[in-house]
Length: 298
Image (cartoon, rainbow, N blue to C red; front, side, top):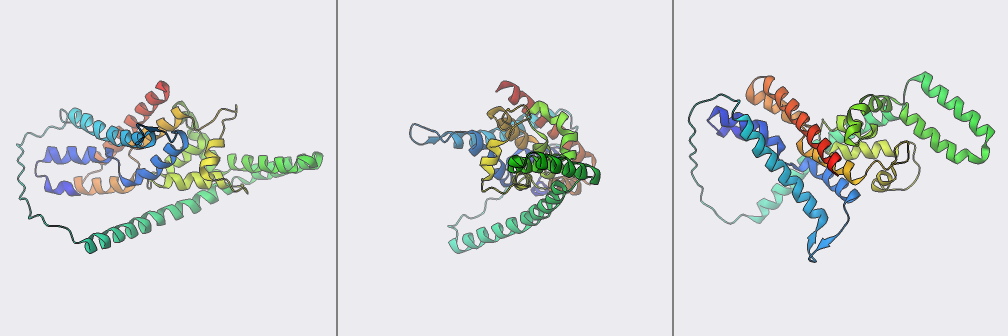
């Protein structure tokens, strides 16, 4: 919306197309969770945190990619009008700390209220999709494991955990995740991450709530989400959240267009669906290719 101050049409459009590459606060929960998951809490020279350096690199990656993309796009957006930038500098004064505090509280309330509503609705929807599935599949699973429990009562606890996992895989959410898994598996992602990628299109921070919901369905233990993610395994026993997979996922969130509100505002500002569609396609494609490269390299 701030691009309304840019009179040059070409520069305004370029700014609109690359601004979402800059890391916003909505990405921070994803960065924080994944960094804590795979990056050791190590310090260099006694004060440089490795986790902090990784966070800084993610921000720098968004900035560098924005510069590269804008340099490339400027050759394809044909607007020849000259550009002028005139800005009247205001009188600078020391801030009133009361106003700063009130503004911080109000902004925090707005974020929690707006993002919280989305997270709650999507979490409830995910709970339903993760707990229920096609009737014939669920009935067959119940009958199969009921017979197994009768045959091996000493393994009842283990079989109940296996039943919960099987129900999740055969739920509506599991079916959706399994459908897209072949596309995202080259990036190191499993079907649960695929579901989170879809739901976080509403708001990126929904990723954390989605993973918490998916890994809590059918679980009665007191493990934290980080512990559950560390214990996640592929069917062959390999860890899901390895360093390459987590780095690939972080890069995907740096570059992908996963914000429906941004696309809606771009449509309103450009008065056409052409540029939002282009923005979604190029950012998603860029995120996929860069994530694939990161996964292969590491």
